[in-house]
Structure formats: C-alpha cells, structure tokens
Image 1 (tube, rainbow, N blue to C red):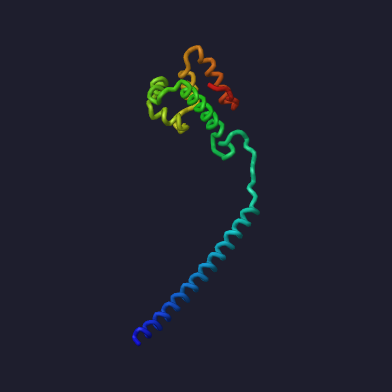
Image 2 (cartoon, one colour):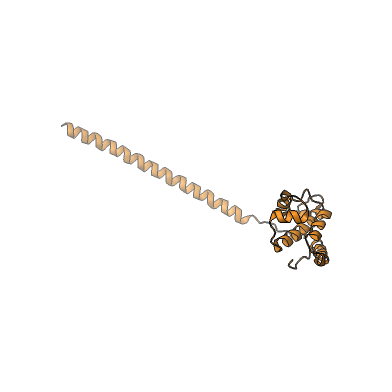
Length: 155
C-alpha cells in the first residue's frame, strides 16, 4: 500500500514537472519569436538606411576638417617617402637613427607616422640626408612629387 501511495505521489510530481517543462518551452518559444521579429525589424530599418558617399578632395585631413590640413598632408607624404627609402635600404631603426643623426625613438615615431614632433623642413632634411650624394637630386624630386601628391614611382 505504501508503494502504491508513493507511485501516485511520484506520478503527480512528474506530471507537475512535465507541465512546468512544457510551460518553460512555450515561454522560450515566445521569447525566440519576439527576438526574431525584433531582429527582422532592425534589419529592415538598416536596409532602408542609405549611407551617403562623398568624394574625397584628395586631402583626407581637409575632408575631416582638421586645422593645417595642407601641412599634415605634406608631412605624411614626406614621411612616406622617407620610410620607403629607409625600407629599400633595409636599415634597422638603430642604423637609420645613426644615418639621420637622431635617436631610435624618433625613427620609431617616423615609421609609425607619429609626426607631431617633425616639421616639413626636418622631414625634407631626412629625405635628402638618407640619400647618397648623386641620388640627392632624385630624392628631392621624390619629395617634390610626394608633396604634389603624384609620388607613384618606387623609391
């Protein structure tokens, strides 16, 4: 008789557990449908949104509205020419620092285009100093093309 009572109690408990599980599954399904609806609504809104594309003026600093945009553009072009020349000579940062008569942290900054501490004149000096005497005229030509924005030739 005790076993019979235990079976009935177990049956009630398992019925409650299965009812609870069914309720949980239904709740999860409702939440999943709501989340899917929210996702589809968001994607529809995003598809309607049009990104406006504006042509560049050729100077990204001017496009961003930065002060001294022309100077920043010139510095980047000169630094690019110096970095390409140093790379073509396969100089380590220490050797490049020795060649340009500056310390290695300045070479690191130059290679990573952290140009706040460099003037246009100094970068021009680096470009001409990193070239042997006969190539100095070519380096000046590279610098002029770099400043003008037409530096297409390999250093």
